[in-house]
Length: 398
Image (cartoon, rainbow, N blue to C red; front, side, top):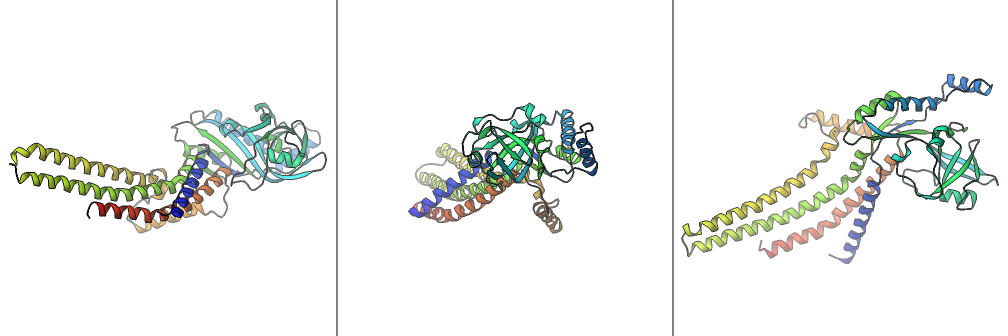
């Protein structure tokens, strides 16, 4: 193998490993993404009455959150935690000196511990009481803090966004995933977003299913009854989809090695049989009975082991069928059913309007990267594997 090929294969292996680690860091949640519910005319009239001094009424989003909280209070056998996040891109944030920066605003509500906790640099994250009450506090990523305040620790200072004044209570490590449009992010209680002039763009309900609950379909029905017009995602399933290129790359490599191993087993078996034939030239067959049995058992074990490995490789190759049963036609030999299944899957992937979550966008990005990297690695391995097979064949005299 040439040095250039070896270096390229090493770089591809590092890229594949990095992508696999990043994909595996995605939390195993179910997510329901829906456009941010807009206030109805009745809600608008209520808001107008509130401004005139009448008794305060809950907003449309607050009523939806209460409905969701009541729903899961009665469904404790399906989820162990839930959280709701809103995302708003391009929110202008300004501080007292007039400096303004555009960033993505994330509204938090519920059991936010089900998401991976951001790395805290200074300050703190919002308390649960602040999330429930919609206290106007904000956590900035460190790059946004520097860009806006020109300091790395602006805790205790204030910024204005959407007509609401927020107190900075913490700064977290700057991270940006492929699912983020904006360069910076800020995090506030979701109920505080309701007080802003511009509401969120999408709302994502994240559900932590109980281990072994298998309640995806039931939860999807519940979420569609809660707010219609959304998309339900299973992040564990999307993670498995992301790992498919790696699975098939390994199946390709092991299958090729099995072909080489088959040659070795066949050569070894032929040698054992030739040894028995040689013994028969000078000894009676009855005296060689133990040798016959040993050789026969050895050959049987060799081929049994080879068949076992082949079965494992085949099982790994078809395992995604159990994870994605929608790929399998109702009648696999009927062309009409194959066509129907194909178009059903393509329609699910190519909706004209679709609401995605940052996690699903990130997994889609890594799936594409891993697909290209694994395909290129398989192509680059063809020559070394062919040479290995040729050298083995030459050494065993085939």
